[in-house]
Length: 199
Image (cartoon, rainbow, N blue to C red; front, side, top):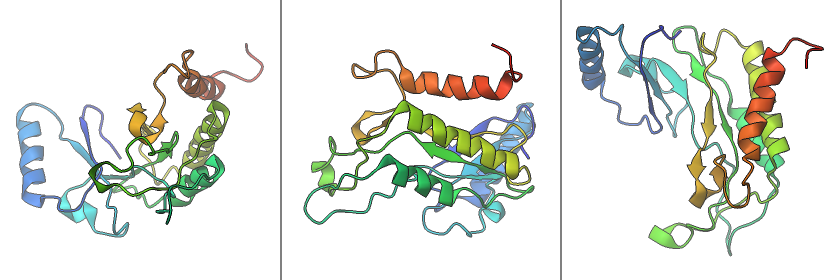
């Protein structure tokens, strides 16, 4: 489990992690008066890779999408498919190397397609704040049921604050001036912390 006072660094591509470099980082942090550093990694290619042996103290994930390439342009799919992909990939944590689950707020990379050779991919145009809130509730429930796999602080990653070009964002925009995706997070967290029956 994470130790209070440790900064958290997340590598969203853990391939090629440097064991000696991580050891140096831990030593430097302790020399500076910190209890060490929490280092989370996501291995895209092999979820069973021995990240703990390399020096990653935590596991996490990023960009959990079901965005297979389309043959002739992108394909519209339901946000529910994207949410289910998230749920299927939660897990893999241990008390020695806790897991930080991730939820995806959306995916629609059409603004970036064609640039840098990026192929057309699936996209999920029907996302709503309510669906996003439902996925967040499910993630919290999953953590409730698997306390031995997650951090003591119950950390979670949300994709993303401002990935506008990929359609995964919760920041207020012209299309969402009231910040409904942010309010969805607040609503779910208030539900979790307010005693039943209280306003």
